[in-house]
Length: 523
Image (cartoon, rainbow, N blue to C red):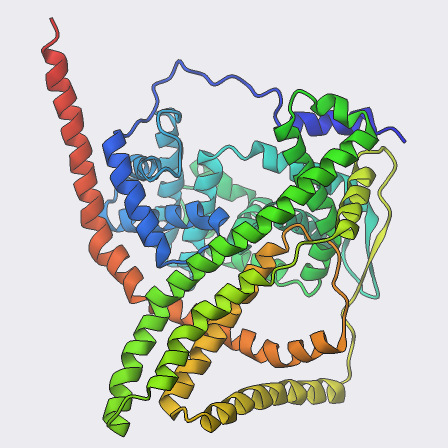
């Protein structure tokens, strides 16, 4: 069956085969190459002690730089220019490409942030949320994401009428909203901050027009507190994960199709007119991405291991040795050796046992793409509502869930005692076990980026889930808690970064001054 000309043409336009020409008439923002090398090197070092998914690093850098600059400077235009230059220097943005007019656009966003925060309408957690919204807005302004938005809109338009919820009353507007959120999450791995910004734009359009309310910001600041609650409510929707699961095959299919078009731009139009040839190309690219997933896992495990060692393990080990000497008068070398070797060994095994998806996964991707490329509506997918349980059932399940923690950690503790671990080394081991298991789980999820079919539920997998869930939950709690106590981040962000960036600013000023003097020598 031939594909729809209308659908394929839309996708070719979205994938940017006919990109508009860049206007070279306006002066561009440039940073000296030497300054950029220093700044880029610093960012690489700093990112080792602040583990973030690669696609979120730039957004995190914008937020970090924005917070520092707002503490040191009040003029939004000065902050805006310095922020853009720092991002260019660190190679988060291209050098010599962005027009000078962007400085004014960025300064409006920063002024908006300053106005709202000056009201103190909510707690510090709300202020941090507002800063994160501005960071996402700035990234959206500075980085052209029109192709991504168009692709998400295309997917939403094709599938929004084909996803139904069974057994639960759900307003049509909420249904559409959850489908749209699922499209962005599965297409681009968007986090809560990115999705939150898109919801703010939908719920609170006045936020995007500060010129209309900057003379009286209090009502806007107070309403924004309620908007945050509304946004968080949608992000925590009980069916959110089920929506993502349903949407994922289509999202993966579109992402692989985009890669096919990028690899073969000249042949793209012809491929989209020949279903059999296109499916062969999809299969080839999918196989390549499966193989690349293992390489990404190895890179991620190396980053995670280094991050854990620098920020958490080294501190725990520093505490273990003197504590044992103080309490027992000697070091238990066997326990110390186990605690040192366990985290990197676990991470190594995670990378070693990642399995590549099979042909059935590729066939599922091909079917999903075929549904999107025809004029007929895609087949209906049904999402079941959460199971309603009685109070007695909830109580029993909660007790059973608590029992899994007792059995898991109690069993580990007894096992460690049998092999002569002290209570100190046992605590350190469990601390490492939870953290490393949680990071390993996150890495495995990343490796399943192109997996669209569920694995089989077996007795073995059920037993693994029974014992691993308590460890993973504890690891997530420890990771989020200890991140706030990261002494290395404190050193970089509050002691080293400000003077270092000031030095780079002075260095760039010197290079500019030297160039002026050199130009004066011209006849």
